[in-house]
Image (cartoon, rainbow, N blue to C red; front, side, top):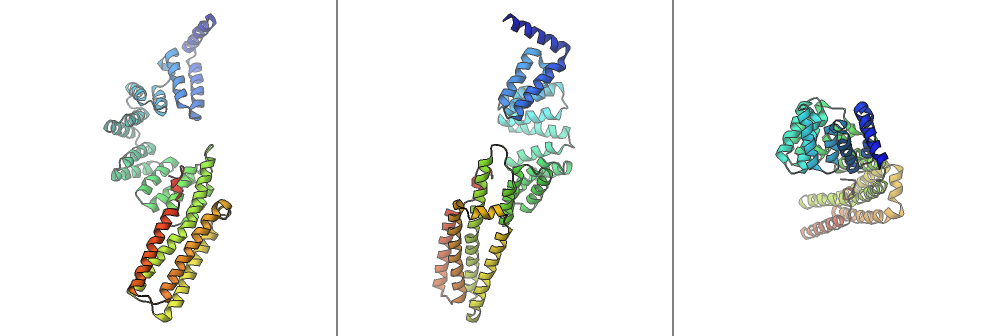
Length: 363
């Protein structure tokens, strides 16, 4: 006990004479905990250092940020206010205060703090993009877009800024812009799997299903996320297989309607049906050939073969119906029957098809 007390006195003496030693030790331990995601323990280390060696041991903004990441927003707010009191022009302190206030449900105060933080460092695009993301989550899309554009102007080569811009424009269904931002984010930070997942989502939405699958398979999952990544890959290939019945149903709906309104001349029916089938087969083959080898392997693997066979069978049935519509002169009642068949096909497709977004990582 006496040795412990003596040791504490020695450390306090060292803290007074060599404060850098204490700060370095605390910083080293905290960094180790933060890098492993143990924010609650990191906050305890910092608070203990403040209690034992004084508030000068730990910068208030660092403790505020750590407390925020440890899901203690009330304490984070208190230390952020201390940081602002000590350095009113410190942008990071206002940012941490803003996020703590958001967690506390004080939205208006949070937005004011975040905007103040961005105004104090107008050249920092990350600050503006953080504010843009908050506005986006509030469904203030006009404001989010303006802030995102300002962030991109300030930091066009920041991977996180580009990635977040992609997410914002993706949610706004601006897929072309989202794709360009995701692609640039991957160029800047190719190791982050989330950016490839984002690009894959956009490519899938734009109908580039083979490129989307390739993006997913190129992603290198973060440590501990390997199983989820495998699930995303499997779901992606199931989605690829089930896209073809939907494409066939879409073609059937269009051609049945056109043939109903403008009946196909009998002499052109068979050639036109053959042309449609050939075009569909060519599109399928080109998409299949564009798949990387691991994608094709998983498509025919035991776990994926059932989906591929079921989807292919449904695609063939729909294409046969399309050929019959074009080759045979149908009555109005028969066209109505084809419409009912298409509706039932869509119901079946919706029930069976699986989207990668249903998995944990792909959202």
